[in-house]
Image (cartoon, rainbow, N blue to C red; front, side):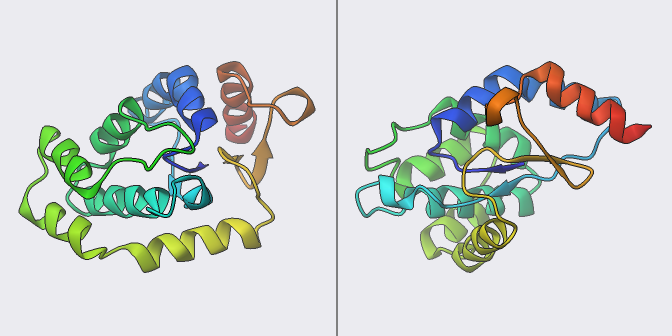
Length: 163
């Protein structure tokens, strides 16, 4: 799943399909790889919120709290076109899910910015231009007419991929 933490459609997908994905993960039916990207940096008034949020998510992953941080980021998603959350708020959200000083340092020092740039470049090189982009077994999953896929569409794609 390629997603941008400022993308309102990504948030919608997380609300709609996130619980089903978590159940599939718990049931050992899928491995989900999240690829945070920063295509909406242009929509955060120069603050590079998408890059900073994706970098914070990477720091959370290193500290074993990606799932919790992913959830809290979307629960506190700023509006597209706003400044986004500042670093202090990103760190506060991390603290709320059990992240500590190593995480805070990574956020302040922008430790994972280059990684976010690489993730975003890979996203573009693979021909994607909108988020969320959901890929199952190498094939992009979309709803009718290229719309956001429903939970049922995603689940069916997983079932078909499993054989």
